[in-house]
Image 1 (cartoon, rainbow, N blue to C red):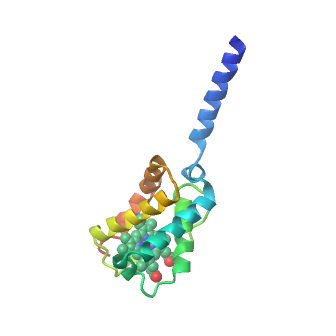
Image 2 (image 1 turned 120 degrees about the horizontal axis):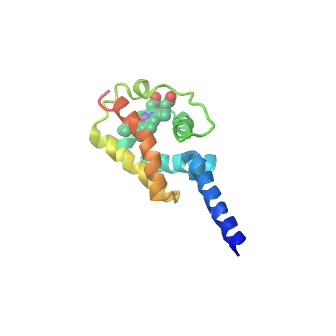
Length: 138
Ligand code: HEM
């Protein structure tokens, strides 16, 4: 009985360690989940006349590809970001705080629809947050 309890405790500790070592990307569910979030995000943008206005004339396939890479890299996934810097991309758009927050709300809806748990959503938002300063009022 003692051995069983010891083994069970050890298994719990080991599985705890394994969870800690997992990247946010792995915890999210990897490339399939990131692709689902990005797909949903683009759909949300398409339904939002204000944010959609910014994307007039944009190459949406490129946007999806680059954003997928970026989320993958920032969440610790095995990808490389091949797009332009956030400053370069959002230059001249003069994005306001209100429109930035509105876009983040669309991303949250996209994650809700992809059934990403709220703690995981917070992890994703946390890694994206530092990019905010490079986008506002450029
Ligand atoms: C969490 C916030 C955001 C992230 C992580 C993000 C990320 C990106 C990425 C990775 C690209 C593609 C880069 C490339 O093509 O090389 C992009 C493009 C773009 N973003 Fe953002 N973005 C964010 C917020 C916003 C906001 C708030 C707006 C406008 C309200 C916006 C408007 C655009 C537009 C219009 C493009 C396409 C530019 C073009 O066609 O050249 N983004 N963004």
